Amino acid sequence: MFHKDIYYLDNCTVDQARELLREHGELLIGDGMSAFGFGGQESGDEVMVEKYNLVTLWAKRPVKWKPLLEELGLPEQEHLVTAGETFDRDHPGQCRTVTVDGMTVYDLPERLKDRGLYFAERRKVD
Image: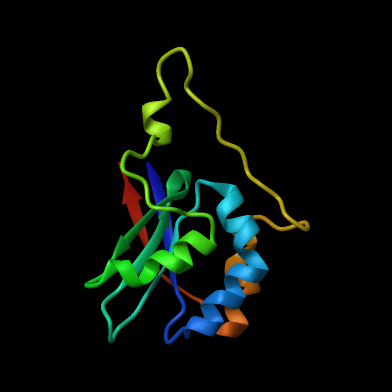
């Protein structure tokens, strides 16, 4: 049985989110199998980076996110080719742990604990 561990960092400001991405974005994005996101209680907006670096945005006014996403190298796409469309029986793909500066994504919960990151739940994955 597979699972995924869910961690939260409550009351994270935009500046704190940017700092986290500056410090650990290369690892989080480079890993490709981890998922992370940011959400706003007041706006209801959420940005989620899922497996294979698929970015999903939920917002009442998504156009306001366009400049930031383009700055991050994530321009809007009419048709997005995802990893799932490139895998088949003859080309199954590979999964490996990425290390940046001696750290993996599995080191981040302990590393970010002092900033308030905490374990919330373990979810079963089919």
